[in-house]
Amino acid sequence: MVTIKQVEVKTVPLNTALIIGLIALVVGFIAGNIYSVYKSGSGVATRTPEQERTTQMLARIFALEREVKSNPNNSTAWLELGNMYFDTDKYQDAIQAYKKHLSLVPGNPDVWTDLGIMYRRNGNPTEATASFDKALELNLQHEPARFNKGIVLYYDVGFRDEAVKIWRELSEGNPNYRTPDGRTIKEFLKQF
Image (cartoon, rainbow, N blue to C red):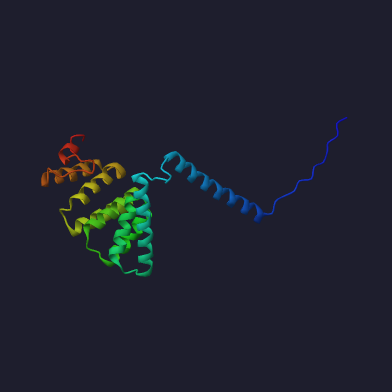
């Protein structure tokens, strides 16, 4: 016959568990820093240029967020914040910042184009196209708006013929226009 021995199970209070978890996190952070200092051999933890750039961008975003919170009519800060969000792939945040800037200063086709790009990256081709159209209302020859409208029409909406037509018109107006990957519009059009 087998007897089963009863064991009393004790629980740890939630506050104690949280304190233990926090202590473990702090010890892990300190140990990681000590290890990185040891591995670098310099006695000082080093950052890569990319890490330094990211830190600077995050600091700038934080400063701009504080600025627009305290001064919501600062159109320049809204624009710079939108650009920082653009560069850090924070699409929805960029959209909101650009929209706020445009509510204060509506006539900039470059900002309308950047807004359109963010709408596209955020999965909203309808709003992207509308933003590019607004940029083109302000400046019919605005090349980045024309090029990007073609991108949305071709890849997102399926209006391939209309997109190629836009790119051909762009090429006729400026055969040296360069796409974001550095090709001329003529080189770009060869694939179609």
